[in-house]
Length: 170
Image (cartoon, rainbow, N blue to C red; front, side, top):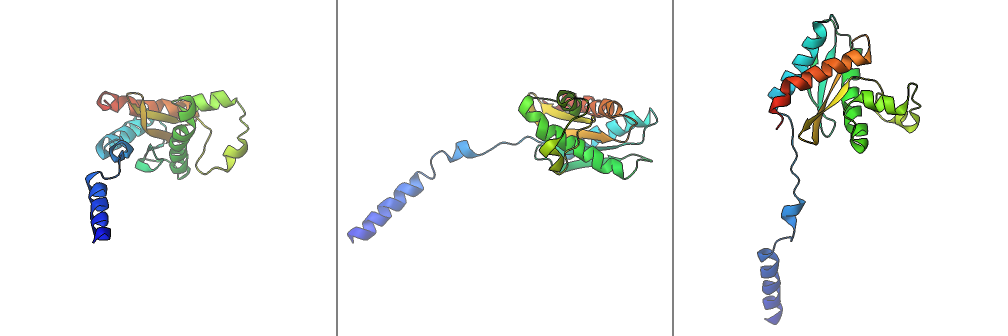
């Protein structure tokens, strides 16, 4: 009898105080809505199309997973990978130094970057055209654009996509 009373007592303590600190261990992750992501890629593609550039725009969430992709009219197949990889690169390499664009990363690394070990990582593309999307100071996504005749032009179109939705990132 004493043993079963001890078990019941121990069970009561465990269930009355479930896993201390559990609430502090739950993460809150912010993400763009599908509608907002679609609006940003649409604006980026439209901004480039107005200048005669055939591009693809891709939004990746903070984990680097594609959320929205729009391949503009006339954009080649290679633009799909370039846009995704630019968005992924700015998320993964921009965070440690708080760099918001792949242009800033490329500038830091020099005009002819020696990628070293980075060259072996999948989806890393050291080229302008990726921009982090922030809610306040938190990077919640990134947009990448590929296909314009220069990374600076891709990056300008990516920034146009971010600007379009910036008022709703609170």
